[in-house]
Amino acid sequence: MTALYSMPDAFSAGECDSIIAAITAVPSKDAMLVGQTKDHFLRTARLVWIDDVDGLGWVMQRLIEIVRKSNSDHFDFDLREFAESPQVASYNASDSGHFAWHSDIGDGPLARKRKLTLVLQLSVSSSYVGGDLEVMPGAQVLSANRSQGCVSIFPSFALHQVVPVQYGVRHSLTLWAHGPAFR
Image 1 (cartoon, rainbow, N blue to C red):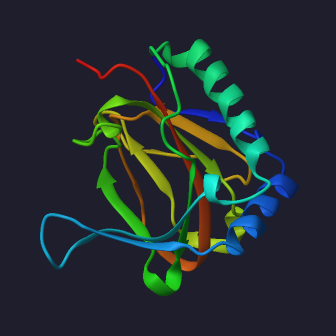
Image 2 (image 1 turned 45 degrees about the vertical axis):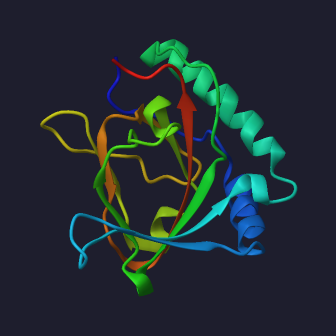
Image 3 (image 1 turned 120 degrees about the horizontal axis):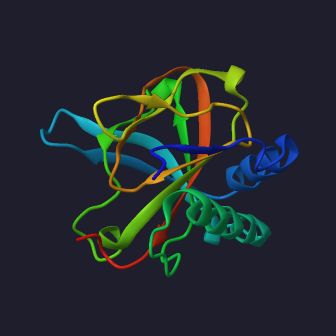
């Protein structure tokens, strides 16, 4: 099984820019998820779900094909559905945008069934500093490809983080593929 699979150029720069433009016209929600202590924020980002954005149905169709191919070629998980809308996160340096170490499998009914996490890099990598997506499938930390349009896919149980953005804004889209819970 692959720990972190990358699909460069899965989306064109123009497609990424059009997704960013479409989500900026939609009201977003602030995500400030509290971690283990009151003073520690697990995540600081602005979130938009693409199901709430008109004209982005084509994005989900492309993502479904990417998940199908990458799962067939690299993971071989029992996948059955996409039970959650793809989520676009904007990590802004002015808010110290970040997402601390976590896994995407949790206690909720949908989180227990997450099998694969897919992250589409929407921003041009030179437009921000920091904001790297790091995945820790074992003792080694792997950095995801920062190229605009690249899709990174990894098992949802793998620890991962987005390091704080120091300059600019990092936009990324996340989708989870679901199946029977891991045992």
